[in-house]
Amino acid sequence: MDKFELVGKSLSEIESFMSDINQSKFRAKQIYNWLYLKSVNNFDDMTDLPLASRELLKEKAVITSVNIKDKQISKDSTIKYLFEFPDGCYAEAVLMRFDNRANLTACISTQIGCPMGCSFCATAKLGFKRNLTAVEIIQQIFLIQADTNLKITNIVYMGQGEPLLNFDNFIDSVNMFREFFQIGARRITVSTCGIIPQINKLADLDFQSTLAISLHAGNQKTREAIMPVAKKYGFDELLSALKNYTDKTGRRVTIEYVLIKGINDSVNDAKELAYAISKLKSNVNLIVYNENEKSDFKRPSKDAVLKFKYILEASGKKVTIRLERGNDIDAACGQLSSKFKKQ
Ligand code: SAH
Image (cartoon, rainbow, N blue to C red; front, side, top):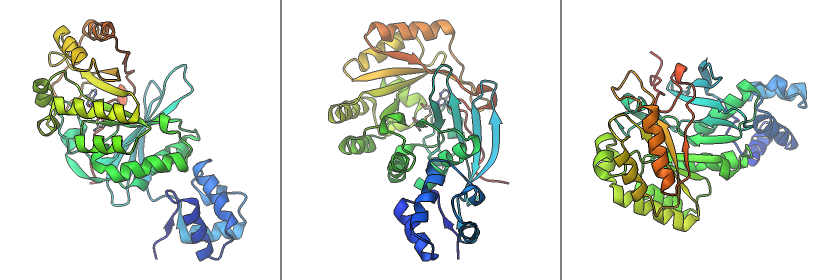
């Protein structure tokens, strides 16, 4: 019989497992706390359980069946994790701390590879293998916490994959983060390349986490040239869906815009973007393109980035420039490209 996998189970599921192995139910709460509040990943450390219970648990249960396969630490102390899932597939996640902030942010993956094919992104070059389950999504956070002994305060769904194409598992994982790990909705951000039907679903669900949109262009033509998804879900239609989302949820969206030299970084591009989103309740997050060996795109000059920012600010938008993390270990945006499987 397969061992019972604990991380990802609710309190009542752990209780019924404990009663199945003739253990008292109140021990379930102790295990639950060890797992989710203390991120303990071995039974010997669960010191308030009797020795016999710990031995029995080792026989009948595993804490998680996902492994940390590799770990790289950047000069800026960002850590990139490579996880191995039970079927031998790999995906990456990144842990980031920003100076002067108490927040500890983890960027997690929702798919093995990615099907979206954005021309500038290294993950896209991998192609798509499969969706991660909700439990596989949350185990990334469990393992990072267990490894570092630190509590993650913020989660961004900005790793490998398109979260909204793995919709149910994505939503289940958000709910698990809230319930098990006590991470508030407002500390969770999901980024999408713009899957309109699913954005509408989020609006209907009154989604209370932050929605970020990889817009990357101020018009259909440029967007379509770099993001194949735009051929299916057009620019104007996407902006209307976002408008509907902000109306229904009352929440601001984040417009992500990766500045790529000569593609979308001109003064005219900035004006066009400012105009396109002028009526949308939104903030803008500019991402300076991270070069990678898998594509020929280049990062823009500092001057171009600042001009772009000023034009948007002059139009009344709040604009931030995303701090670049972990570039030296290929952990920055668009650089996650672990192979699918062990060879
Ligand atoms: N599929 C989702 C989640 C990925 S988030 C989405 O598209 O939003 C990763 C972010 O990094 C996206 O905004 C993506 O467009 C951006 N990105 C991809 N490649 C990049 C690169 N080389 N430099 C900077 N940002 C990049």
